[in-house]
Image 1: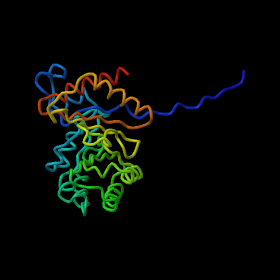
Image 2: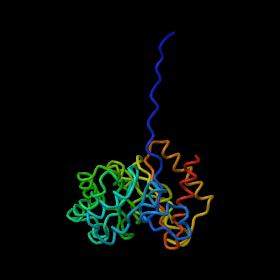
Image 3: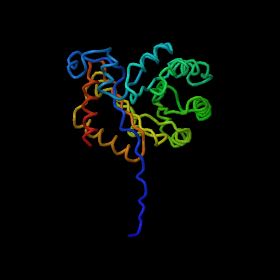
Image 4: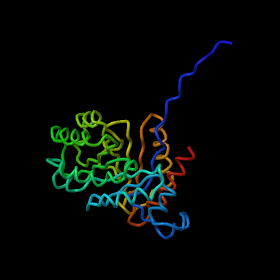
Length: 255
């Protein structure tokens, strides 16, 4: 009988990482989580990822990041938002001293550091030279995932798309969508990063199950196409994020 060989199946990225901006647990959903432990420890038993956005407003000591990492299972991952000193005050110019300080702190997460999130001010237009210098400097220091959320229309042009792709930086798909051109993720296709702030009322509105089902399908398809996928629910003001994230995670798992 002739010996036959089969081509190896391509390895898929990790399952989509679904979580919230922060790990605050609304009291009404406490029964869905373990009773013992800190909020982060309890959160990390139900979710595989979280986005730290407090780092945008104030620095955290490396020891704090180390403590957070130690509170989570081995497969858990943190996304960390760059400080506003880099994105909104320096506006990416001459920002490497501040970035180095931030990265030295966040490195306390060790292998739990999953992605850096760069959210830009709405007034920051795409400047190819400035962006190339900034992202090239970031890439010299950090080889892991980077997701950038621009909010000026000039970023959704082919030149910006090409530059982000070359430097392996994903363009975030944020909801509510600001422009028609922003209705899909962009940049480097190896990473898909969704940030859902609540719509129509930003930070407050819950998402309905039909929309979450469409998101689940989108995430599963992107993973099958080889992308690492993140989806962060930031509709936290009324506590809707946790329930939406739990529903989305279940829908993704069922697919």
